[in-house]
Length: 481
Image (cartoon, rainbow, N blue to C red; front, side):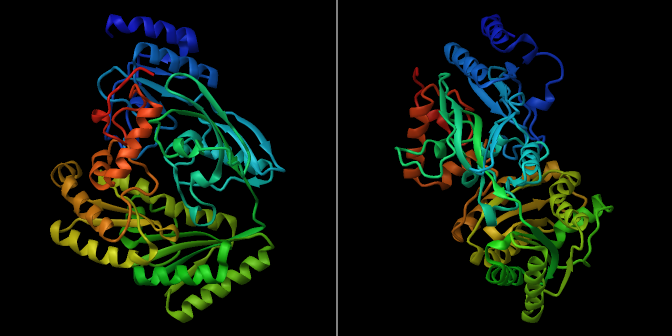
């Protein structure tokens, strides 16, 4: 490393301990993204153990004019949590900030540090007899800070909302090293701008989230899970409407899976049970009840009977045990891993009005099949809140790398044009990162982009926070804070 970096490295070692400033050895777990599409090189990987140490690191980096890339579990799907290849950026990994600081059962909140793995936070809430409803496939490795930085969604948004709706307060370290202590558990606080919402979803471009107050809920008395076969997307939407009418707020999960998506699971994970024969579409739905198991069963059985009578479904399988319910969810959550086993693919995390999804799928499927014969459309996701993972896999026998190199831009243009035409968004829950930064610049309104750049300039005048992510900041003049 250049000699001019040595003073900063020495100061970082003093601030957090030399054992937590990593420069040598195998750093691939920090420097390569989960999809293996981005592989950067950090000036140093720094692992602070407290908010005070995060603040010290930020002050040092500000003094030396060094950019900082915050990182949680490094599960970003859009290249948002690894350094570039310049070797000049400090990678700030928050894995040592992993404590659950407190649980306030009466207030239904928990205060948890940013590096706490989501699954550990869920377990802590459950041990207190409560529920942290944020749930997604990567919950065994993603962290609370990353969930909030990307405004993660997951499988229970339909009932409980995104990470944004589940967060009541934040602790944030600014680019200059100041600490904003906003760990309020209040549901009502009308004392000026709600700064919390600036940082949630900002992907580490404005500051470093170090802790959060999360909403908790009472554990449901019972839940029922089922798989249902549908012949079309229209039937899936009809089933959703019926489920919402019958179950109302008790409907906590509604996931759709195309046959192409489930065929990849059958191929790569044949040990995972698939209780229903292959169908054009399979819906995973879950009802949670606060009253009793008998009441949940009555609601669920009535819903499925009505769906069969209405022709919304052609078959169904109801979980008769907790183990069977978990197996059904495991089937849904294995699709992304099956895609990874199949090879690189073109991912689209899109949001649409639910009413527009059938028309979008029909027209966009047809356009892709005509433009890229043989391409496989792996469509699955959270139909209940309008979020589809609309992915394009290389034709059977083709080279994934070659297909992406030749066609990724054209595929993205076709899909995103269709999304806009149907009133949707190019990012529902994965964020923008590096992958969609240029798309955002083209598709977001000029007024919105100007406001976003103004916020970035105000909170990160040195343009040092996660540069190159979300916004192209080349047009923003960096100034001393």
